[in-house]
Length: 327
Image (cartoon, rainbow, N blue to C red; front, side, top):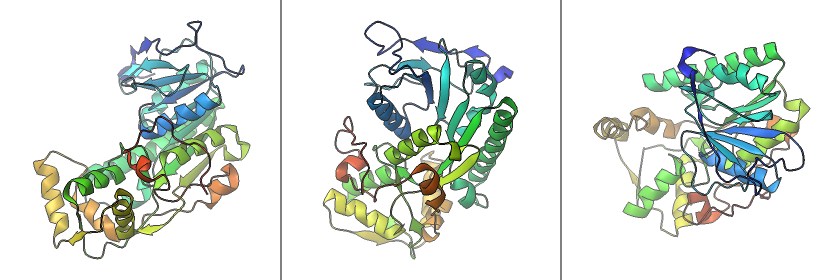
C-alpha cells in the first residue's frame, strides 16, 4: 500500500451484537461496506440488517442511528488511512469515491475478500467534454480507477463488478433532487433554462442497494460494468414538475435567459464548485442509460420516480424505508 494510506483507521465498537462481538448472522462472513453514511450506504445497511448479514461499515464519520442492529463501524478516511479490520471478510460493497478503492485491494485480499462490487457513475459519458475542468478531471479519475480495479482484482483472483448510476435520490441528502425540492419549498418556484427538455432517469438509492447486493451473488455479473438508471425516463422540466406535485404545490417555472452565466457566477461567489454553467446547459441534454443488461443479469427492476412520495425527498422519516420491489 502506498504512503498516502499508511495511517491506520480507528475502530469504533458501536452497535455490536448482544455478546459484544460482531454477529455472524447465518454463518456467512462479514461484508465490508464503504461510504456507509451515503444515501446508498444507508439503504445497503438496512437490507443487510433484514438479511441478518454481519457488516463492517467504513466511513469518515459514524452515521447516527446506524440502520443495522449489529454493524461494526470503522472511522476511516480511505484517502489517508489503511483499513484495520479484525475480521475475515467475504466481500466488499464500495460506495465511497471509486478512486479511493485501488490502494486497499491487496490488503482486502489478505483479509479474505474475493468479491467486490463498487460504484462509479454515468457521468463518465456526459462530462468528458465538459467546459468545467473539475468535471473533466473527475471523469478521468473515475475511468482510471475502474481500469485499476479491474487490473488489480484480475491479478489477485478477486471477482469484481462496477455499477454506474444515473441521477441518485431517495434519502433527502443528494445534491440534485433534494436540493431542488428544498428550493421549491422555500421559494415556491424553480428557475429553468429555455429548452430544458433533456431526458433524465433518476434512480432511487434503495434500488441501487438492491442491485449491489444482487451483484454480489450473481456469477453473470463478474467482470462486468452496468449502467443503472431509474424506472422512468422524464424530460428535465417534467422531472422538476413531479417535485412540485409531490410537495403539493402548483408548478411554477421561471424560464430565465442567461441562466448558465448566473449559475456560474453564483457557484464562484458562494464557493459551491458543483454549481456551474455547465450544469444548466445539461438541462437540454439527454442523460439516460440502458437498464436492460442489469435487468437481464441482476434482475434489476427500479421503481418509478418519486413513487414513495415525500419520503423520497427526505421529508418523512426514512428509518423504515420499504425495501420491497415497487411496480
